[in-house]
Image (cartoon, rainbow over all chains, first blue to last red; front, side, top):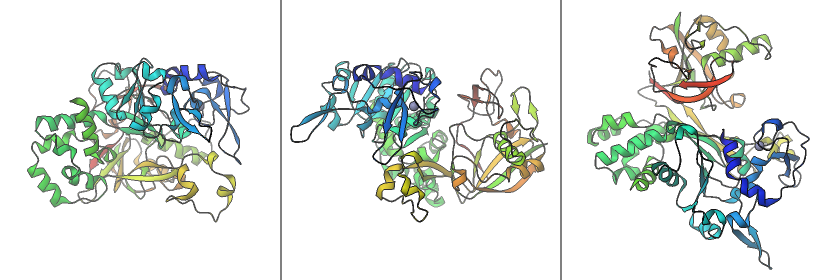
Length: 275
Length: 206
Ligand SMILES: [Zn+2]
């Protein structure tokens, strides 16, 4: 299974209750994921979609369209519009600041912020205990440590932010099969993170009594400055001298400079999730 | 002959999902040289039966004591379909990455900037250098200036650096890197198969 088939399986309920008006597409492939119609999950079915006035008509596969499906039953009431307070259902594609994990058994778990917690708490997904008031990385860590994620090798999908641009999210959806290459899907596209190295760094922090320091941006300054392209050799030398087991820590640091930016925030999520 | 090809990097590289490899880049260059993209071209690299592909390494970022490998954010249009046509067609209209109606359709993609790049290979070093110079750049967005480079040197090398590439997933031997399981092609035109390869961001200090 790939990321799309997992996402499709995890969102089946949304499509079932939505009564989608699908058509036979006039194009060769989905305008979002670019897959030919023969290879999408609901083979040869397309949803016509117009981005806004003045834009060309596009055809999306049912998987890419799923974040645009509002569902009172599954996700709850998002907002009330107009003087008559007409309720509008929540859709995954508008859950800015919220993320999700799709496990290797295709179960959808949501990590929501306080604003969305109140909106989705009446939905069926929350009733099943699949909605958590936490950040997406903490949710992933929790599912990983209690085994609900399944074997990472089987593949899971991690979404760090649904954001507003669901077409960008769905256009590059990637599955993770190795914690050293965690594909972080969001509405700004997919990026790759070495979660395994970050867990190693967290372990270093616990072993060397640096749990508090590791969550402060100041502690990582020489490392993050270098990751931004400015090398301060003197500061780095001083840092290496005062940090316990510095060699081991440097060895454990992720090699991707993007992973070295904002290390304190990543440590905060990992160290607090593990407690 | 085993060689080490050093490239000076002039703009950040946007890594593709599968990190670029020397044989893939040379194949694209060979397509350009021949003006044909529909056939498989022969490359000036040695073929290795065990690896089931050419002896050609993955991209490696080279830092110097003065300049580290750095993270760079590259704003790129996420989808041209979603730009209003009159805005794209007006050549005087600048795509503003700071704000306005373009901002919502731009994404900041992770780029990598280091002083040099290196590729290891086994084959005819001079032909490889000539071929790779036909490319505008390496990685995504190379037609828009990302990953532009010039060849600095190609020198003999006996460290078997070409082994830093994807290997068949069922290989039974020690690999000179910490392997990550992935699905990739072992040759530029081959089938996608299970492979073991080094991490995406390989680094070296000059
Ligand atoms: Zn699609």
